[in-house]
Length: 427
Ligand SMILES: Cc1ncc(COP(=O)(O)O)c(C=O)c1O
Image (tube, rainbow, N blue to C red):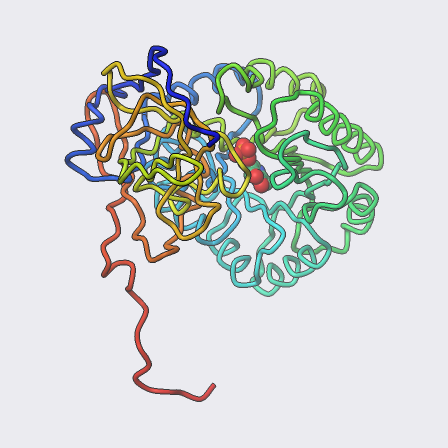
């Protein structure tokens, strides 16, 4: 038996209230699992980022994929931020939340013709183009509509972001962007683009970056390329430095780059650039502002391990299953209890539905409320209905008040659009 240790160390306790809201009372009222987000924590991040950017010609385009709930997007609208989108769905959410089209940039390797048409019709600010095929499609679709599309080349600088392989995007073997040689050819031939104004550069090398060196290196390559393009007579009006700034999932282990230091790297790399600098942070704005509330369904003593089975699963928080990501987990109680070691698992029929292995926690019982921390980004936005589990509720907390910003799905909601065959049709 490997995880049976019992000690009487003082328990680590979770906060009982957050952003002025009693979490036990909230969970009692709304049920679990349930994502909670602190508006105050998000506004603090927004404020810190704005302060760091002071005096720069910069626009923050929040990466909607991190947390695309319209209430979170609305906080970005209130801050004057734009959005970085990777689908027409994210564009609809961003517009619904009041983000002006002129502050929306569209990234992604697989923009479909329909999505490009929707984005052109909405009048978004810029397409971050990731392949020659996409560039030609954009030219054709813009020409057909008699509009001009503004575009940036997403440069793949072949830099290792030193992060998890599944969220590393800036190496030459990754599907994202194009190499500098290819980008150079695009600019050389850009006069032929009658309806695309290719006047921007874009780079995004990965997510959850904790080491500043790859960021410095990627920006140096992009800045060198920008100078070369200007020397060749091309006008570059915007440089988009992407997102990727890491956060602290594990206290004492993860040491995020301070926002001032991150912005200083950008200021230094692009010191003589007079155009607009775009930033696309996602995780850094939202991750630490969110937590997942879950109840213990049962404690199961296996033959080798002690399992804490929670009502949250990989369907609400995929990161541990997908990336072996570490999230801090704590009971929402101040009661002192002896510490025990558990594997913390969800009810989904996958062994990978595991939040933590060999984790020490104050002893838990069925019915206890737990808080899984740092789930504000890539939590609810990666949720699924696997095992026919309705999507969890999402709740915004704000200085003692709360608002349900996504209703827990009902079985009817979950089944909407599905039906047994009543009639066959011919294509
Ligand atoms: C193009 C682009 N921009 C921005 C982001 C946001 O990254 P992060 O949430 O790490 O800041 C991503 C996410 O991978 C991305 O693909």
